Length: 301
Ligand code: PMP
Image (cartoon, rainbow, N blue to C red; front, side, top):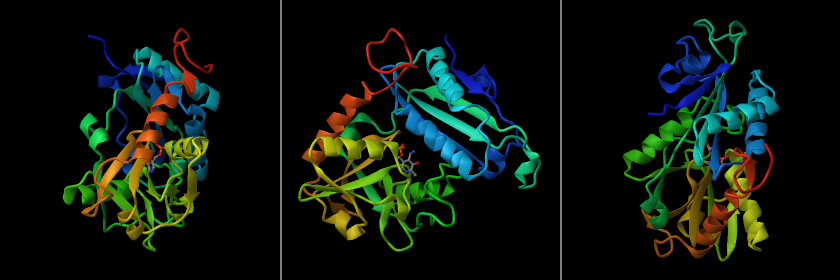
């Protein structure tokens, strides 16, 4: 039986041996940053963008990533190869590392890198065909001036709470509003609505992570000649939209067919959503950093 290898600190260890200290501030306080990245057909999708965002998150919280971008890129490629994966989800974590029980990160002298690569399907296939149901939730998106949603930190309690609140109402995903009541994003995905042929997504300053899938979809929409606007909207605009969909590395692109009990249009994934989903599936397999020199497509390692 082949085992799963995880990059931990400075070496590959078996999954069973991949353990971190209970004094790691990533564990004690959520003090660290992370990325979720996908591999399609041996190509790592938008790796540069993910690495840039990881280093930006680390810069913002004054965390030293213990490798250069080039070194980390190689470690990620090696992790995919070592696990013989062709299509996978990669989790890159940089924690502040072990310290003492106090908050002060000056006691954490060894930031810790973890790279995990494995298979992931967030929702069953039927939901991608049928679409998901979403509900707005009581907890608001944390304000950008309190803890910026642009920092992809290990502190995901805001996101976990809204996911639980959504699950409690029996739906699949949360719709997070900001403190002004404007729509921001889902628990781990960006939101798009379509009305009269125009595609809208909230500007990130309202309180959404600038998703890499979001940006890829904006590029695809423009390339396909759709009008796309980054502009604020409310729940009302979502309820009366012709189409609604979510994007994210883990979820990819998924249609939303019901929001707070309001059926969206005819309750089926709409034509523009389906078009963008198909186009997204087409580009992900050809646009990325190649892990296996022998595979057919695209860029260099
Ligand atoms: N918003 C949040 C809060 C997220 O955690 C994610 C997942 N990284 C996204 C949006 C989607 O971002 P991306 O497309 O870069 O995965």
